[in-house]
Each structure stands twice: as structure tokens, then as C-alpha cells.
Length: 426
Image (cartoon, rainbow, N blue to C red):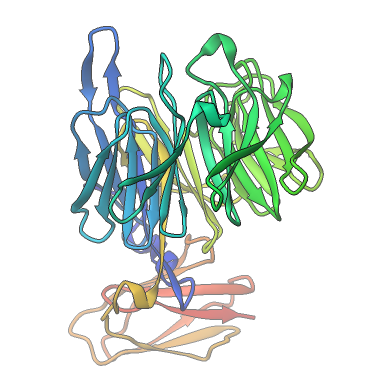
């Protein structure tokens, strides 16, 4: 278990950013390291958990057998892991293994009602490339077979209403990469329309749904990356835009109107504007990330870096790519999932409270606690979780803090072993 380079309190704001929802943890799936030349698993596949409230990262499960991990998905109090030849189901609370199903070549996962959707791919091909399973038992319910029209391996899968859309890239046949968005009617259990992304849209790796439109991040033949837009209502390609001059399994994520991706020529993050259909900017000074996911509750990004053999880090970034905190993590954590739950769904956090007034405030705030035997550390955090003020409580229990130098905005006051309180500076 490791501690973040920032203080434990620095991201306590994440847990209290919304009265109804909390980011409980961020799961990070390490791909491990398999020596294919010698058929040796040098580093095992592991599942890690990062607690934004404490800045701690810990390994919560080690998978023995699979050569690599390919996806992690949170569904309520359950977390699903796809790894090489199996799907493993864990409790997101105590990390107990709940179930396991052997599925050779499993790639990506999605949830539709009480069903678990998955794509498949493998060297030499498989008997089918898309499955639907019962998410509670992991039993196979039905599949799309080659005779139904899906004849090549698929990577990402997203759900829009009662249809699943697949990134069909044929990625395990390097000489014959494809660029297809395939449509599965989940009610009729049929494979329907295919949209050809053309030569510029080969090898779709990630799919995003934004305002009813599909966007795919494509690695092409690894000489460049592109982003394609598809209208699923008419099953038509709207266009493809080249976004990088180099590519190699590029990390990408959507946040608002922007798709963030790794610009390999610069080794930094860049942003593509969906509304403008153009690269918006390069985030100079941002890290060369391997995995990335959005926390839309707190307007931050979680990302990872790695040397693929011995070290890894999990980073918290603001939406401009600035590193807010970092913590050592497992090697090659390429897949991340945010565990966001209702506060009523994870039980009460029974911490003592304190009084803060006035709220809103202009030049000062007053904290009222019972008389203390020792002074307690007080940390004031801005909306991004950065520490802007620190002080200690008075033993009398009444502490006045000057906030005149703070800019207008929402802040969080965190006191050790107490429930944080937000206030507004006007």
C-alpha cells in the first residue's frame, strides 16, 4: 500500500463533492508483464484500488493464469475484470472473488440491463467475437456468430438505448486491419448494420457516445491516429479527422465536448473538439499517459503512466492536464474505472461534525469545535482538491481563518477525523 505525494486530506473533497453521489474509489487493472519469448509471467495481472479521500493505492486482487488484463468495469457494488481467458467478478466493497467464467480472448465489457456484454479477439481467430452473459451468474445467454455477419475480432463496445455498437478492428490479424462500427440489436439478438470508416478509420480502439452520436478513436495502421463520427440513427459515417502523426494503442477519454488523447509526436495530452471537428490544443506539460478515465462528478481525470516492466504511477489531473497528485501504482495499468455510488448505497460515514460560519463568507470563516486536548490540523482545499490554506484549531474550540486572499469559489474545510464542510467565498 502506498501513500500519495500530497497529503491525505488533499483529495478528501472528492468524496464530498455531491450530497447524493460519491467517488468511492478508482479501480486500476494492471496488464502485468508476460515474457512471450520464454512463456513466463514476469509480473502478474493485478487489480488495484485508489482511494481519492486518503490518496492511498493498494493491490486488492492478483489473477493467476491470464497473460494480461484487458478491461475493468464497475456496476454498483460489483467490479468485473476481463483478462485474457476469463471474466472475474469481485465485490467492490471487500474485493472478494464472487464468480469466474472462462472466456478465451475476452477484450472489453459493457452492461445492458441485467446483461454483461463482451467482445473477443485472439490470434488465429475464434468461433465468435461477441457474447451476452447474465451479469449475476456469468452464464452465456447468446452470441453473435460469424454466420450472423460478425466475422472479425472486435475491441470496444458501447450501449445506446437497446443496441450495442462494436469497434470491429480485426486487430489480431495485423496485415488485415479493419475499420468497422458494427451494430447489435440486443432485443432481437441480431447483428445488423455495419458502418465502414474507410482507410483513414482503420483499427477503432475506443468508442464514445456523445449527444446520441458515436465517436471512435482509431489507431489506423499505427502510423497515425484519427477520430471518426457516426450517426447511429442512419448508420452513416459523418467524417474522419486525423489527429496525430504517430500512434500506438493511444489512451483516450471523452469529457464534455472534448476527446482527450495522447499526442505521440509531443508525448503529451491533446484535446479534440467534437463540436468543431478539430484538434483544440496540446496540453503542454501534461504527462504521457497509458490509461485515462474521467471523473465527471469532480471534474478531474485519473490517468496512469508506466515503463511497462517495473514501475507505474496513478495521477490525478485537472481538465487542463495539470498533475494535482500522484501515487505509485502497479505496472501497466492501462484500464481504469471509477466507482461512483449513491451515499445511501454504501452506508453512512459516521464522523463527528463541526460548525462553520458564516457561509457564504467574504473575509473570514469561523470554525467551532468542542474544547480540544490538542490542536487539530485544518486544511482548506479549492474545487480541484489543491490545498490553499493550512492552520491548526485553537484549544478553546473556536478558530477564525482569514480567507480574504482567496478568489471567489467553492472550498472545502477538512479537519482530521471530521466530516468535511464546503463553503462559498464571494
